[in-house]
Image (cartoon, rainbow, N blue to C red):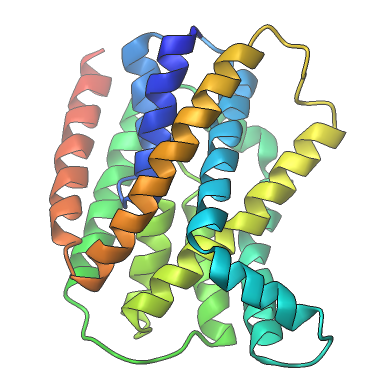
Length: 264
């Protein structure tokens, strides 16, 4: 993969990680369009690096929340910050378990499987359509809610299911306040991505002397700055209940992907 392609895919990742249109699905479609011939393991590595970039952009946007959570944790008391952190950890368990047990099977899905991406985008469209019509509430995220949203995050490992779309939609359908749902959705994925990166580094899966490092770096930077803009934009969109437009977009792109996939 050359640097220009990496930058294009980085921008796609940065924008689609937070906008509810499936970053993994768009990355696979982008790789197919650009003719990326990476083997599944390299393709997944590039995807993980870009997700790491958007995780950092999440920390920047929610830096005040993250700082308050860390301060609360270091007081070593059962306070609001500790409760929130426990809910985040609980939400991580389904995705962590699925990733650990089915890592090889998941890697094979990241190989320009355009038809699968198309069907999963249609599922994302349905979730967004339903969430956009949910009633406004002031409900907090409970421990049970956190686990259910975590299951949505695990399902969103599939390319084409939007992680932010699935988790925010699930939260809203559970009756959680939209602002709280967005905040929880964006923060719950950060430890999971960092954990995945640490696992890959210590297992030797990431080669820092690889000839792909220039492309990885370019993609990382593109994803980080695009992610900053998209994260701020998405927060406003959820508040304004404008998910229906993304539902239409995901449905149309999903149909096109399915048609093109079967045609080829």
